[in-house]
Length: 203
Image (cartoon, rainbow, N blue to C red; front, side):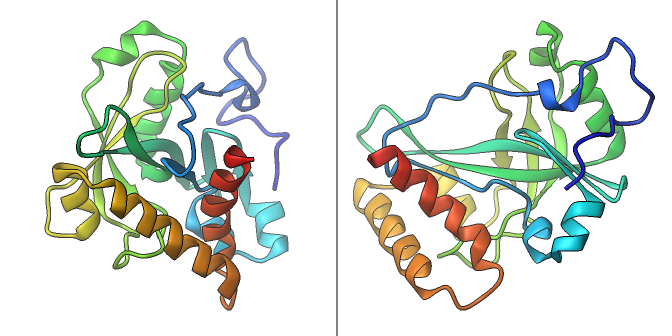
């Protein structure tokens, strides 16, 4: 993947993409899972990843045409204080992406209206989640955006609204463990990052 080019203009006093990071509380396993890139990155060949993607910890650009930001789908866990969190990617319009970058280190970002985004990860164990409609809420500096799902009857959207039990959290862990062992599809490499993230935090 290319990491040398800055977005849009030549080098200025503006932030470099490599400097764009967020500190997000890391809940104990298995209360949080992470995808390290949008699904399109995992669908690409090695050459395409090298030439067509600029991937950083919090943002990604594909072909200088498609723009992604990492955010959090926070699901209430019934009778618990902490959330179950999917750290995923959504695509933004170029206009909203530019706006988000301009306000990356500004307190004004908290006053921004939500940006429309398309869900850009296929989460295992659910009906297809790719291209679910979302609203992206920017939060305080150093905190990943909050991803709000359109209130549909999709199981992930229902869980996002109504919450889940600890037993459901355990079921998710079992499903991801099964997929990790299965490994029969190129797309599963995306899913592995979910499982690996949780396993590393449990060591």
